[in-house]
Image (cartoon, rainbow, N blue to C red):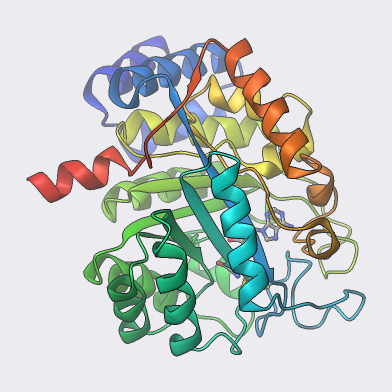
Length: 347
Ligand code: SAH
Ligand code: SF4
């Protein structure tokens, strides 16, 4: 195992079988995490990039079986934040010192291309970097968002096992989602993807394929989230994903894609109080503090426990600063584009 970890640390290449061997191994996790931490430091440094997350609508036309925002969940109070209030939240993020805001929502058709482009242009006037995470759209929409000034886009593939994807995302198409990722790249956006870990039916083989998929699409950012069952979904009786497995998938992603941005995800922190700290020491270099007003935020329940992470934005920022300095790391002062993206632009 140590030879494989060393190989990954030095060459950033592993075969599918080698990935599976490391994912199945239970003894060398700490060594794997330490190697990912070294590679993180060597390629993207000690700075941690903060992204202010604005959850601007919890209305969704899709019915993903794992997600609390799925359209058949009628136990959820739905909301849609108006544009002036979103702009106010973005200004608040900037006042807190954040350099990037992430606009995330369910797939909500109210936000047409035109409405979103107007919003993007307004936010960009203040010089913030802007990430969208609003689901599947056509190429023309992505192109229009880029032209309006959006910088990045997050769209997880969720799993590369097509059969499993079909089972958990009824009515959706894996090929369409994969095409969205190539359309985003073609539109000139920084492309983020990622997967869930611990969905019923996922295996170590699936995670190995997921990691190779991230490399294959030449991703700029990858977010890995342990699955957490939501009581108002068909998967309410399923087991939670394991934090250790999610950290292993994340660490291996860092080893194979050394210069990308990787968040310590909120789902990791939801599973364990030191989940994000552990992630930051196992390959992650980004945190996404939630700056959505509490009156909305408590209804953005992708999974239970999520809305409790952080607290009020001001308190959350102070706690994050303390956490980051206790790890001997610093908050970045620039917008924190993916080095992988910048390197590709310069090639
Ligand atoms: N609608 C957009 C963005 C919001 S959902 C989209 O689907 O891309 C953001 C992410 O939340 C999803 O990509 C999914 O990976 C994650 N998520 C949803 N339900 C979850 C659950 N029960 N546990 C952990 N993560 C979940
Ligand atoms: Fe909608 Fe995204 Fe949840 Fe699927 S994961 S139901 S697309 S919010």
